[in-house]
Length: 106
Length: 122
Image (tube, rainbow over the protein chains, first blue to last red):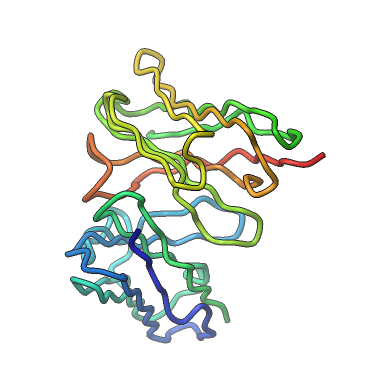
């Protein structure tokens, strides 16, 4: 199974900050990496697919990069509605696996 | 509007069974792979099971293999998850999710339901 490791597990930031979250796969997954945002008591929401493609309707301050084993989610100019938990997920092979999550709070 | 609505969760005793349903609307259900993801209280997301658009190919996490069965009724736009031999470790919020393709790898989960809660306790 492919293990996904996110860092950090939590971070504190302020409105307007640039935030970077990393995700590392235990083996190469090409570009088959997705990012989801989950707010408390809400379902996850797809933000970025295929490592760097922005899902329709997602603000352009969100961006993704990387390939192989190392990936990054960047939020430029953090907004109040961005405080949430973020998960990476590999779709290279079954079992599909998620990272442990990164909680972004104030 | 694309929508997924889960149902069937509840309180069940260890060793018991439940059948979860996911009613889909707003898209051509038969064209897309579907799956289930769960989230135990206070923890992260865990993929549980997925099926291709036809329902002919199914996949399971090792933690549920042999106990859970995924199926779909394309005539009724509904996805199912049969949960057997439940234990406390299966207590979680179970989300139904849609893939934007007929298959489950090399893709993503672009639409999610709000989840249905399964609690396994005596």
